[in-house]
Amino acid sequence: MAYYGLRQAGKDVDLVVAKEDFTLMCARFPHRQVEKFDEKGIYYKPFEIWPVFRGYTYWQLRRMSHDEGFFRVISLKMLFTLKMLSASDERLDPTIRQKYAKDLALMTRNQTNGRKKNVEIRITLENLPALKIQEQVLK
Image (cartoon, rainbow, N blue to C red):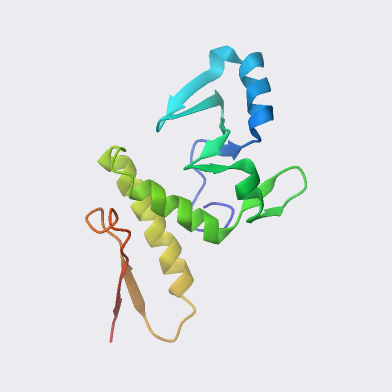
């Protein structure tokens, strides 16, 4: 989100790595392993390192990313998809889901700023489980 200028960076940086690399990291840093959202990861402050993120592997995410030299950055389209999946995941705490919903609102507001019509996209926890986004054109 910070990379795209949508909000300030949070306290951590999520990294997705190839499964083979993750296995090596687990062997090297067994004391740093964490489980979050039913996924096994490694926490090495400020990085959270995952072999899979919301069901997508490194190789799948890599296809929708761009090269920044030492790292790759997920595309805005894929970031939106991952935020939508996270905000609609009923297994997550409602406060965490609300954070993802706010991120989605920031992203959609940013995407509509250049349009001639003022479009408000309402995203609520009630409509996320069905993955519905309501658009209302304001006069």
